[in-house]
Image (cartoon, rainbow, N blue to C red; front, side, top):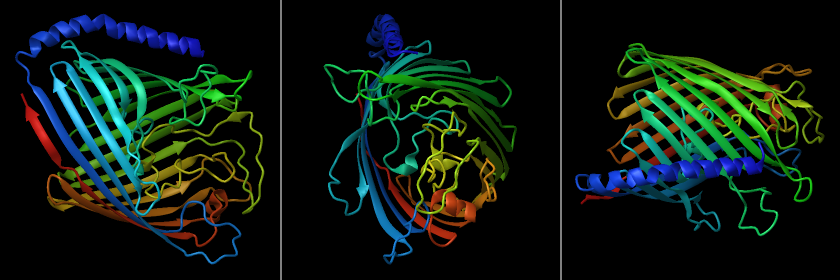
Length: 446
């Protein structure tokens, strides 16, 4: 799909929205007589601290004395303004986030800013900067643990009603208001240049089954700023299924990636996951699951400090694109948040079990064990990456104030050391806490 085609689709979508504006406007003029204006202002304040004892690429071949841990505090403040009147809804969220003591931390950016029109018969249109969340957020989610989180400048139209949900999303990104070379996009706020998404969800009547289908066409900038600049397109297609009979919840997903990446190489990757949860009481949850993400056929395992990059005709390492990675592959974010030392991926196998309980109403306690392994055979190395044990507790002091804390222990193997170029002990410890204050400052109707 060319850039001209992408823009053409955008104009078609704008025309579709315009077609319905007159109907929406007429409906709005009538509905405002019986529907109120609503305005609310809210604050979201997070203080997050971590003590990291190893993990993620360490110092390689350094002769300097290195402290075996790192301590820091993060702060994030969001101010949200929401307005609603009849079929019109709008939202703006300002955000500041930085490490305590960090220089130039006074920057305030627009995290979200969008307007939405909703028709009585289920159609809606939305445009602006939006935090997207679909299904279990494995492929598309805000990844809120990362503090800055993900948002997308996008147009979204769709239908919701009678158990059906259908969304179309279109994005086109640019670095600035260029006079020439206006199609070249590199090092921008988003990794992609263009994106087209189709998402459909259906809840089966009288049966606790929900099913979703997702298609993404992602355009990445390839070439250099000149005659060879062009867009390479990759596709992701798959589905997500849930079944929730009584005290059980069963989830499954499968996705496949094809097309070409920004290096003009073919992509042939896939992933599958399954999860089962059982609720013996309303205060206890038991769960277990397994994730498989494909990896490249040949992944070099260099010695620490060595250089080199192998040549691949086909990339087979699955890319989780714009999902909430932190939810799925361990609190320490070893996988899909940080790159492997060789630049390619050996894939991942993640088998886990966990338990959650609420001894008293405001207190929740969680525990989980992850077995991590690569999905590709490695020359001279075992496939096992490590064993991860995670503990977490959270306490809800009030509707507006909550405190959570956790401790993780990862025992990595030689394979983990070599792939991540991590120098030091195999046993990695990681502690953290988050204080969340989310009051509604102001709310009114008229």
